Image (cartoon, rainbow, N blue to C red; front, side):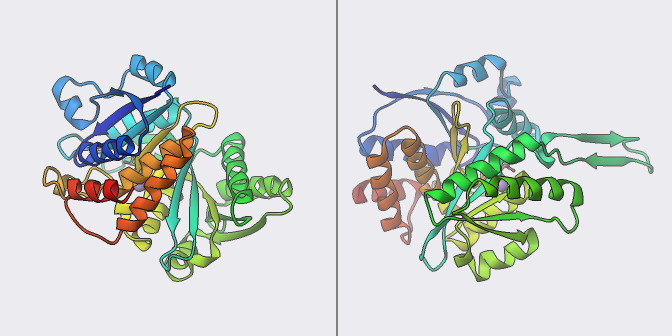
Length: 323
Ligand code: IPM
Ligand code: MN
């Protein structure tokens, strides 16, 4: 039976790279029963719709969601990001953001497990006395025991299928409240995995290690904002953000797959965006759907052409030829 997948091309280069992802999936012989959702900044400018409860209900019945990128400079910053992408992550409880990277020397893959529903992204805070000389802005970080624990548990589970090593990345020397909760929770979960070795890095130090010594990493678990920043860095050091794929997972529900990169309005419509991150995100989706053979073929094909250059469509052609 065909898998039911919702497609959200989104804005900018999003639809361009997702089109290549769909071509490759088809060429790999996997049949998808797709539903297209015209959502993002362009849709908002047309009729004011960002995301509706009805759409969210439809998504809950799908097998997966495949997303390009959202956000456009014509719409105030945050409106689409919060109203569409983050709302999707929160309401579908996509609590794990799983982002794999190839170490720069090609020696191994490491993954960042980014907590995806809490932290500074939760929307806690506000503005007081806005527009006056005495205005105040606060933006708190929300960290629940449940949220931190499920992220840590997922990271340790992943490690057991890999090199049995998990690093907690945080900033416990300054963020003494949230850091304390993360550290204690991490250590308690670690006690359930005696065969998994653990490490801890402050996030600033982790940035150095990402560049200078990524060999030390197998699985990294971290909070939402640190994970956001660290995974752009991960992309940059492992062949460019054009290769960085991700899965937004709800292991008990529907999951969403998207490249790490954004909508790149500066190159939109030129047909030059690298589709490999979107294609690799498609492979993660197929893996999740149980199509492991096709997923592996696509990953290998992407690896074979990753050093090549070309237009968006040409890169799609090359992956298909390498399948
Ligand atoms: C990402 C993106 C999003 C994030 C933006 C678009 C809201 O940067 O998926 O990494 O910050 O999570
Ligand atoms: Mn990001």
